Length: 459
Figure (cartoon, rainbow, N blue to C red):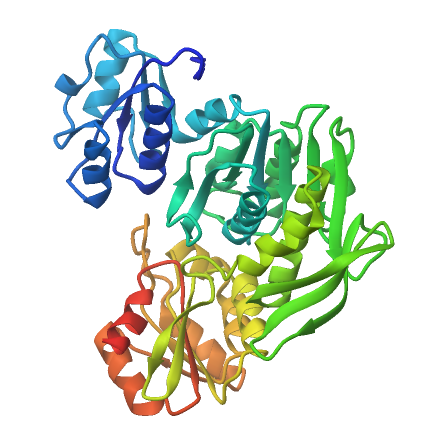
């Protein structure tokens, strides 16, 4: 495979350079001395910024864009083998790699490459860890799956040996990464349009553990079922974390929540008190996420003062229990939760947030996920006082015709919670304005475009 070597910059072409992740790595390589160009379907603010940096962007994706002087062509997962630019690269014998392979190659150029994996919590944990490294003036390069307010972007280009990134298991893309430190937050059923079952998913995470070098480190949630499956035969060092359990290397004790629902706790390492932690985000799940970030930081010899400073400064990422505003006296929160476990964690966190009645507008994400977790969605959503269902966000899938949001509504009502289903956002907005009252809390929830409902209400 072609090696991306920062000591030997070359000419790289990105197919789909306007994507949020691809553009970030295009910036990174360009700043590292590589001659970068690329193509996309349309002009955008992202491509405008690339061009301002001197990166050539083509807005017609044709074979003429691929010239023999290129050293490497990188493409997104959405690009198939019959794509004209990819076909031309093959004809000219130019090496190609997908985005995940490219990220893995970039990681090899950093001595301390940290990959944050897990079914849930990757973006938040990556962001927490980034805040700690920034507070410690470690000048990290950061690639995160959401907009991190501290850097105003999803990517930060540092000039140190530290690289922090999310590592997603979908399509096994994280198995192409080259981490020195790996984090596993949790391992649950998801992406069943790709994985066969939970055992298939667990096997994927076990392979991820095997990527770590013997000098490396695995930080794993000790509450994961049978963690010995992941650590058996591991040559890298391993530390565990979890809530209120001295069997783990790192644990949180004396957990409480302040008036805003923000968690605080006493941090212990191997039974010894280290410091008191006060978070700027809500929920027990974020206490667990913070422990993973803290474990990595302490294992990297970062002082606890920088850890507490970094975590105090972290108030969440975009679309993770994000306060959007207040209208007619009720508060609007937006959250990316799109899996039953995430929904349950968010609604449990909301219980500690000041409110009278809790309303949730949920937009299911993909037909396959909705069908696989139909009953689990209903049980998790029933934690709210009132649930409003939007149509399923299809994303990459075609409608099979055998599942709908109304199926979830019926199951929620059978559990004794009020639930409604509307086909359009306009109907939902009118219903909410008529029924939400002073001091109610409204959460728009899902991985699609449901955020637009809250934003429309605020206008």
